[in-house]
Length: 514
Image (cartoon, rainbow, N blue to C red; front, side):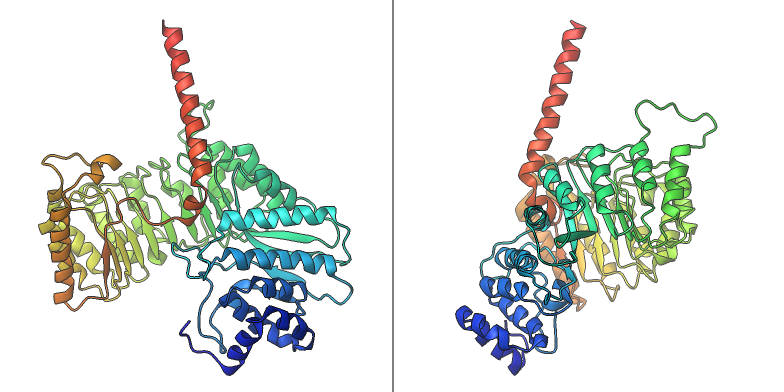
């Protein structure tokens, strides 16, 4: 652990290292030492002790994030340990607490949020339980408890980050349904939905209670159109929603609709009105939706300035960019994704103006596949020069040569807060005349030796400027996504099914043509 720890914490470690002894001593332990014993047990992966601590938890609240975070007794941060053994013990212990509970049980709220899912687990067992697995475990436990007669009078509220797919939809829907007296009542603070049909999504949302929700992520394999989005947002008002993510094509017109003759799209206006009622909303992710000429209609009515905006691959036009550069949101943006737009070619002045507006707050900027070429480096460096607070810059998939990258890196050295840069494989590492944007196959066929030489060169540019604090990399297949990692088998099956359906439709059409 190597972290600063108090004598109290060392004693707690000694106690929990011997589970039989810990079991006997627990009755004599002061209530305010339970949090300390919990963190020590989690650190040493003593799952039997964790389960027991939760069964007997003497305080009104159990909050996982704060319990695992740095404290006066132990400076270490264990929140990035999504340890399967420990988390299973927590949930089993909660169930024991409900089942064993006489009148003396005090626990009212168990907050299981606050875990960060990372690529490499640092817990001794090295086995993670991701967000989907945690959802599944909690939902199954709730369903088991619904069948049991319980002694406790009021349900324990369990705050959770819920991840639902077709694979766990049934059990999650049962768990979120009305709980019997004395069980666990799940309160959903964030909801991620993947590979559901729109009807299932609406059903889960109704059960989860839109009034509680802080974050809603509807991703990849949920096929929504603007009609669904309008239904979804109309059903609960979402007064506490901070962050909304919608899947690709979410703003497309429903298949049967006819374009409005007066140019005003009632669906879009209705969606914008629903968004404007969300007074806490500060993060909006709308990548891969066609929003040409629609940005002002959508974002104009919002009452709270956005801090995070993803409009990557949204086919924005001049009117959209002009709105963005002049709107209230520009001066508050901390994270901005404009990928998939030829910014410097098509909108040189508005792009420059937008970054100038956002400069005081902008921390992370993504410009992937923006058609940035060597001739754009001067204008790009100039626009980035104002962004003194920028920490992260990502611009994969742009046809820049090694020489142009060296010039750009020299300019990036001037940004005092910059810490992370993701740069493309230089154009000179690919065969002459390679087409952009590239598909994954073309992207992976490059001259590795040439790449290594240019990358070393770029690092040397940073070192000479005394900027070894900037991490640079070329993650070819995107950054690690724990949620996709965890459900890849199910998503793979889902995509295969979609592919099969498409093939069947195709062969049917061929037969008809014959």
